[in-house]
Length: 226
Image (cartoon, rainbow, N blue to C red; front, side):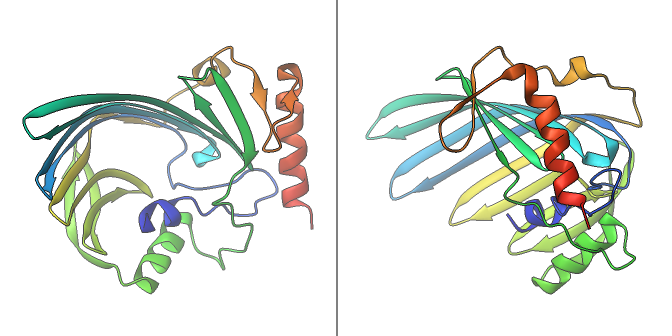
């Protein structure tokens, strides 16, 4: 949670919000989790894909997971499919089960000066403030990452982008690691195409999908206005 918070700091740049020190990227992750609490065994497997450009101002993440729970010899499986799209100051949560999209202001948005720091440096500053320690460097898929230990979890971070996470909390182990990664690639609007579901605001009112791009630009303009 701490690293998620640190990595979503958005600078109040009049041209765009900057989250990473790399312009664009496409990352595929493998998700593995397991553990046992009070006799209940849980195993999780999944995949995650992240696409971003404009230094993270625009990003879409899609997660598919299956969680199997075994109790008293009986196993149940729960499948989940989530898509989250961030466009500047706005974030879209796509509910694949209910076939609807909720549009809202990004709750992690902080429009503040980075005081001369890059996004990576500012995230590092925040993690140190919250007790995190940089314990070395390692390569993930050939990319040199800073390795952080923070609140019992380890994070491998490349230019502000988390390529691997490991945690072990109360007997629950989880790993999310990049298995493919490319940076400074060309992306278009087609890469961010959302399912053809109705879109609602946080008050439950349906929005005109044809006006979403215009609305997002207006929100960004309001957010960066002096």
